Amino acid sequence: MIDIPTKPKAYSYLRFSTPEQQKGDSFRRQTQMAEDYASRKGLDLDDTFTFHDLGISAFRGDNLETGMLGYFLEAVRSGEVAAGSFLLVESLDRLSRQNARRALRTLEDIADRGITVVTLIDGREYSRDSLDKDPLDLFVSLLTFMRANEESATKARRLKEAWKGKRQKMADGVPLTAIVPAWLRLDQEAQAVVSIPERSAIVRRIFEETLAGTGQDSIAKRLNREGVKPWGRGKMWQRSYIAKILENPAVIGTYTPHTLEHIDGKRTRLPQEPVANYYPAAISEDLWNEAQALKAGVRSRSRGRHASAPVTNILAGLASCPICGSTMTRVHKGARSLPKYVCVRAKGGAGCTYRSVPVSLVEDAIVERLPERLRDAPAGQRDSELDREIETKRLELGALSDQIERLIDQAANAGGSAALGKAIRDRETEFEALRDTLADLEARQAAAAGQTVQARIAKVLATLEGEQRNAAEINQAMRFVFRKVTVEYRDGLLIFDWLHGGSMALPYALPTEGDEQ
Image 1 (cartoon, rainbow, N blue to C red):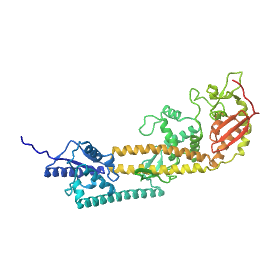
Image 2: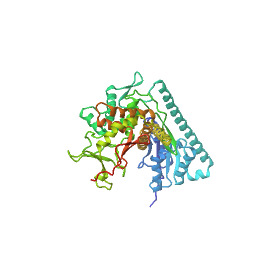
Image 3: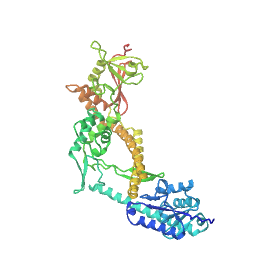
Image 4: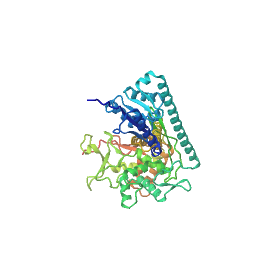
């Protein structure tokens, strides 16, 4: 029996960084070159494994980390691709366009596992022996990688400069991108972003209803009940979309451009200086600042079966127990008793001492004596520690923003990479969370600004001194000024904790031991 020698296996690796290359002649050319080489050299061109990175860039090593080149190496390590096989590529820059040191390491890693890399454009073979013994192979590979990396770096710089040019045109009113918030549109003829009046009116309504105490779920339900058509692909208004509108500075016309940078080996999307008045504003800055302050400093009203009930006491959600710090709730045991404040933990038998305080004593003190104290209230001071924390978060957000923009640029070149898409989504999730944190910090900072504090105090005074006092309006106004109000029954004091820091004491009664349950 005659043994027929087995032909060495050959595998073709094709890569394109843009979809245009795939649609053109590049795919056919690379495929034909591989078939011709295998035929000439007596190699068995494998058609079982498909090692094609279509629309994957090699500049950042994506084809090695998440693409089919990385899968090829895994197949070599596992033995699916046997040592002694050939990897056919059009040229070395198809393997890598990273810096020469990293690119050479990729080539050596493949060769060290017994695979011969063939560059079809010149027929040169790179194996473990050739790289060790032939200085010319090592020199040619190094020069090729250096040239490829420089070409890609130059392209990246040109793309970045092109985006810089677009950003500079923003100063002349030229839109940077056609992608705009849903209540706006790009007027192609005028090359300007314009408002969609009926949608901008809904934005204003969302903010106004929020400040009136309406929750995001309730706003969404109202819009759905009224048959207001949702924006985008959604079939109905959702609480999450209402929340996004309330957090988006585009409502006051602010746009934040981004750049992409590589930080510690990771692509990071970095926000640049926000551009004010880039969009037509849907609401005033005062309305925006009030909403952000409400988000930062106001605790949620009680939930449960009484969640939708009207506010009947002016310290709803603000009254705090002096012993355990829990909320104090208003209790009313019938027509013959007066409403009183009681610690919720004590009321529920959860461990705190039960003491009750007549609501009338507290509210009378607030109505009669708080206005005078508010007129002499401090305007608030800057918190240097908070300022430093905000600056840190802005830098982190900027880095993350640039990372995302770089990924987007790469995705545009790659033509729909699933791996890049996932990376972009992951970074955007991080970006949203970090942006929420920064918004909370900035709202706290805004709440501490002297002019803003005085404006909110003026609102409290207006509700307390109006001809028809309304508990809900007083409560809502106080939530913009105070974080909590401790009913210190042992000393007969109300301790008001300012949102912008510090506290103020107001007597409401003589010190008392309180009432037993």
